[in-house]
Image (cartoon, rainbow, N blue to C red; front, side, top):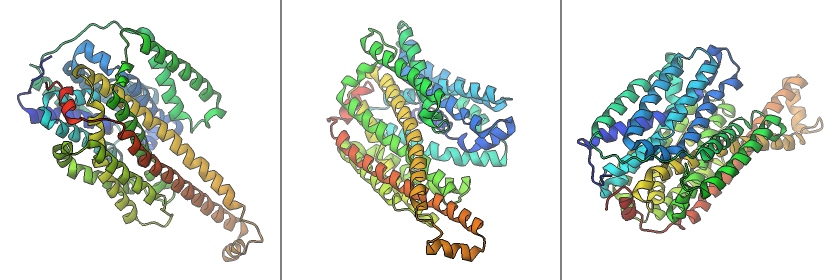
Length: 506
């Protein structure tokens, strides 16, 4: 492999790579707000429509750890170009789907071909930039990772309200074709070294079953009341057995489909733990705040999107500064600062109340953006810093896969905790509601209707129970961020110099 390849136009190559990744990350959230419309149009229940999200997540999670294997087989550029073209085609098929079954099938295809796109973009950006500029490339990618999920629901809602839901998929087609053509053209002279690794069928089958079943459990657990559901119990057992076989097999096989031996690198190990847990907590915030705004404060989907959007402002403004100057500092210090800021914003939210105004919510989101700006790039640089050039794509795929699974765990756990603790607090608060309580007597006297008064009181108590629960969850998330500072200091420098080697700089 040529270690010094530079595309004819570095800016154009970067735009092509970033656009494809932006489109792919955007698609993980763009359909979320459109689900009620999609369900209505295709004549299915709201519950069934969530499979539009689940099918994408399942196949995406399965495809991610296969990045290393696919790269060795086809080469990075060919894999990227074909994945982007197939993603555009799958998006078109999603848009013309005539039934929920078709849409779910095409979304699964879209998720599968999207799998390698992010880690390959990471590997290609590192390889085409000179060592001194690599942190800039990673900072740009970090900005895409932050902004796309925020833009997704806002853009998805706007398109669905003003046009029709198929357009949330159709917009990918021109972007995907443009990105794949640009990258194919800019990278056509890049030397390709491919191998014909034997296909590890045991690893592949156990990965598909284990991860697929686990993702279904995490996505559907809350709806099915977790382990009170036979479906969830059976799926969990299948997942546990398959993952156990997968782990044992992959660690002992000579040519595994997923290289778990990458964890022998200390920085990759510690960086990945920090990335997975911090991203899980970050994802939980992104999931809970809009739901809370709509449920507790009565915001519309659009206003909830606007209240959470300030999160992206500082990362966009600081991207190039972080990229240019971050490597002059100890990256563990920057990451620790990021975790402190994100922890503090969680503690601030743990004091939120039902009457809080829009400005307070938006300002805390804005402040969190400062933490996010200093989180992705330094952590990514740390975890890639001690990998060999040929391990970058596989390492990126494995770290992104674990990050995705961490986000799924976080989504299920925090939603469950919020609802479960809300019910518990509701029960505690209702203990105070008796006919002998003067406040209850006053409420009944004011309405003149005991049934109406009880209904209003019950609704108020439900919201207050959810609010207390929301505050507790954020208190916990705050401590998670602070505890991760310990993890990141277990990584060892040098980071920048070796990251330079990681892309093939020596």
